[in-house]
Length: 466
Ligand code: PA5
Image 1 (cartoon, rainbow, N blue to C red):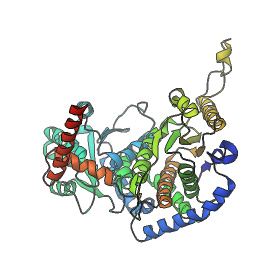
Image 2 (image 1 turned 120 degrees about the vertical axis):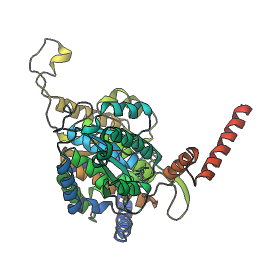
Image 3 (image 1 turned 30 degrees about the vertical axis):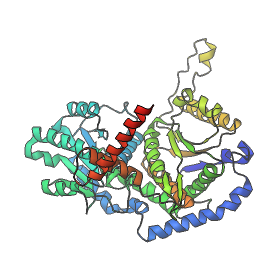
Image 4 (image 1 turned 180 degrees about the vertical axis):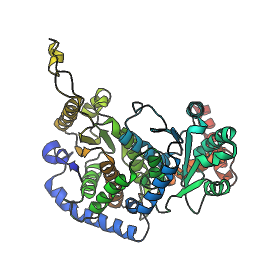
């Protein structure tokens, strides 16, 4: 698989022993990588975590393709209603494989667009309802819990909008993706006769991009999901290998863990030099933050650990963030994501204008310039002892993207093992959800409403004492 990880600029020889790894540190830590792999494999084999299996679900892929084929030609818009892990994956796939927003080809029935209703900002949702046509829209509502307030609220609006125009036929335009055995979305889908696909119980939202959560919208958008899964399957095989040389995810995980915890880098900058990977950077932000931001270890020790993921876009953010990165606190590790061969080089005109500051670019290409920008930023960071690594994808097609997503999921899981935390729960997210249920009057959540009332009382007291 054409994906490399270059860790040279994470070495002490490049950024000094305070910021980079010495050969001895690497040697001493290598056995912990083997243990991380072993313990993750054991939990996986016990059925605790299902994301490694997702790329191998050939039957599901065929069913999703069949479903997409049946609907094809009847819609120009795929309206995804979902949030967090139930939305970011589809958006990442769309941007990476069909082009960054807003410069995709004009939408039509043969080239549908993706509209994601994740936030409950009325300025987004009401405008979207005006911009879409019910007769030309297929709605995919996605919620693993089947009860997330944002998704339910947006879906209630979208459902009414569809029904007001299509009557009983509305149900034919709705597909639900949810848990098989829990949540009211499943009940509603059954009662109303929506086509339904299931999210395996052992696959958490942020690890679900290669389940129906990401694959159904992708298939509806015309993405070749079989190729996506083939690339991910190939990477999965590599991610089970014990050798650090052959297992790119384990090698990247160990590097990252050692720099984070041993060289005190509480922030990670995911730095794609590719607008098409910008959506993946946002997907990754959730994966890293929710998986590795935890209060306790598996042994119950309070650690309040986490590494804040930041998404930066090259070359754009060289003119926005890099001043801070080069001269500000040395508290970050940078991971560049580059693409070797772009869909077009972006050849610059050969004609010279007799202007020195312009003529040196004549006949060169945007691809070459972007590559030079990335190498220059890496060099500048390294000169200032800022550790940085680089994932390089040969190209950005379905197979490479599937492999890259799976690599990042395995890397995250391995870092979770190295930290001895549960990378697969999300108690923090759940608490916020429960407070919202309490505030919005959902029955069974009164105690959360009371906790919020106490909190607001304390706020008022603090304000009075100011
Ligand atoms: O990773 C996770 O599990 C969460 O971020 C969820 O994806 C998010 O909260 C949405 O949950 P649901 O799919 O139940 O609506």
